[in-house]
Amino acid sequence: MSLLGLIFISVLQFEGVSGEIKNLYSRAGHYAILSCGRASSSDPTCSHVDWFFDRDQTQSISEVSEGKVKLDSVRAVRLSLDTSCSLIIKNITAEDAGFYTCRQREYFNYTDISTYLSVLTISPSPPDADPKRDAEVTLECSLFRHTHSHHCPQISIRWMDETRTVLLGEGEGYKFHGQKNCVSSLTVKRQSGHNRRYTCQLVDKKNNVEIEAEYTPVFTGDHQSDTPGPDSTNVPLSSIMSTLRVAGLILMIVITVLVIRGTRSRKPSDDENVCVDGDEVSYENDEARPAATRLD
Image: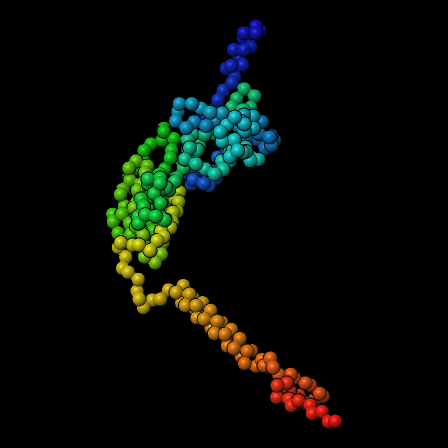
C-alpha cells in the first residue's frame, strides 16, 4: 500500500466525538470545578487531556496542553487540574465566563466534554458609589455568560431581603428598578438601627434557584435625612463612660490634695529638737532654754 493511502486511512480514523454540554454557575470570588467526564484513571498526569476556552466565539484559547497549564495564560496562577483531569478555576471573575472544552485524546480518536460557565456578581453602580458615604446606593446583580447563550428571561434574576422576602416595586428602604437582559438593579437606603442584607438569585423557569449571592451595604454616619433626631431619653453608653472617667479623675485630684495637706500639718517645726530617750519623747526649744549661771 502506498504512503498516500496510509495517510488517507489515518485521517479517516481520526474522529472526534462531542459529548454532553453542561451549564455551570459560580459566584465572583469563589472557585469552580469543570468536569472532564470519565477521564482515564490510568494516566494521573492527564497527559492525554487538553482544555480550551472560548469567551465570545472569536477565538479558542488553549489553557491546558497535555495535562499542563500553559504558563503564557493570563490565568495560569488560578488554573489547575485535579486527579480526574477536571479544570479548577480559583478566585472566579466575570472574565472567566465562557465556553470551556475538555478534549480527551486516545490514539486517533478524541472526545470533547464542554461546559458553559456563567458568573454571578453584585456590585454598586456606579462603581465609585460608597455606602459608607452616601445615603443610598444602587446595587446591580449581573449574570455574565458566553455570547452564544440566550438572553436571560424576564424575572429570572430576583432580589430578596434578610427575611427571604422577594423585593418588588418600592418598599421601606429599597426600590426595585427591574431587570434588563441579564442585569437587575435595586436601590437601597440607609436604615435606622441596622444594616440589611440583600440576596440576588438566578432562578429557572420552574423557579428553582440556580445560583445566589449576598451583599450587605455598610452605612455609616449620623446624618439621615429621613430619620428622626436622637431620643433625649436614650443616653448613649459612650456618654455615660465619658462622665464616669471625668468623675474618677476629679476624685483622684481631691484625694491627692488632702494627702498633701495632711502631711504638712503633721511635720514638726524647724526650731524644735526631738530627743528620744528610751520610751520618753521630749521636745526642747533652744530659745526658751535659760542661760547657764556662772558661780565664782
